[in-house]
Amino acid sequence: MVDDGALGRPGSLLGPPGSVRLRLVRPPNVTIGTDPSLAELYHASYEGAPPKVRDRAGVVTIEYGPRFRPTDWSHQAADIRLNPSVGWRIEVARGISGLRADLSGARLLGVDVEHAAADSELTLAWPAGPVQLRFRGGAREVTIHRPAGTAARVQVTGGSSGLTFDDQSYKAVAGEAVWKTSGYDEAADRYDIAFSRGVRNVVVDTLELPAAPQARRLLATVLFTDIVGSTERVQAAGDQRWRELLDAHDETARRLVGQEGGRRIKSTGDGVLAVFDGPGRAIRCAVALRKELAGMGIEIRAGIHTGELDVRDDDVGGIAVHIGARIMAAAGPGEILVSRTVRDLVTGSGITLEDRGTHTLRGLSDPWQLFAAS
Image (cartoon, rainbow, N blue to C red):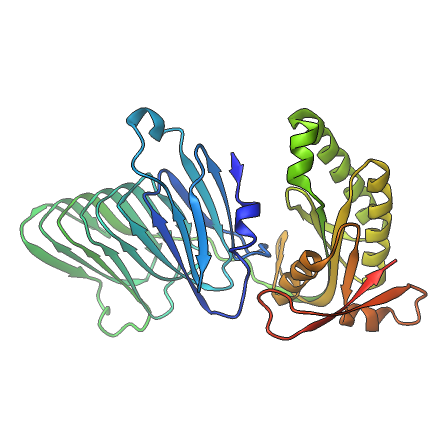
């Protein structure tokens, strides 16, 4: 599995725009979901030959080359996790087969599929306003789930064979046909689903989706760490040795975060995200982690920020998390950078911080004054 953590970072910074277009070109066997704890705009991993990934002007493009031979198809896959903090418009070029999209946690703005769609399943959230789903090249073996009680209209041009809309099934309908739920015309939040060039064995139904966990706001300090030069390290050390180093890294991080009373939220592959109830604890943990890992030959960088977090079960989100990730990205090898907010909160605690000047953090409009922990 090829990880797009590296590809995702330069093209996946959560910035000011409220909506993003995800454009998939010739995508094979795609799984799409959401992850509220993401610091990036999205995260993707690939099996088989990696695609070209571009992120420009609010459009994330993931493009595969010409169609694979049938024997190659099963070896290609993409897993994409979307940050639900922004709205997503999904576009698919050159058709799609094998899509599994759980968008029940996403703010979906629309779906537009060019050419044919086959063997695919989408699970949708409650719409915010009118949301259009367009399948322009026909559809076969496609299922679309939406929350129970959601207003919807289904329009088919080119005839249908084996279409099910909620509790009604239609074996064969020629030409153009339209079905809609009662109250569709008056509903402010609704789905408008249109199929061109006919459908076969298509289901549009409702599901009783589990209630989304309620977010709670919490003032806390986030710590992001990252291993410096991890790509070069894995190439030099080899897979087995690199796994051993990562295991040692993770165990050291778990222990030191626990010693300072923090909570390790997750591993980021070659780093950690942890949360503390005070900035001093986060700084002491980062300094200790830097020292112990240096003895193992592992160099890290770290970023620390204090702010309000959105807490959902085992995940955290919100702008404070994104700022912490951007501060870490600004740190040099072996450097622990903190925001001015953190500096102000630890004044008088005996923690030494050196001014590193102002920085422009990607995805954030205002300059940020940063300080380094010694």
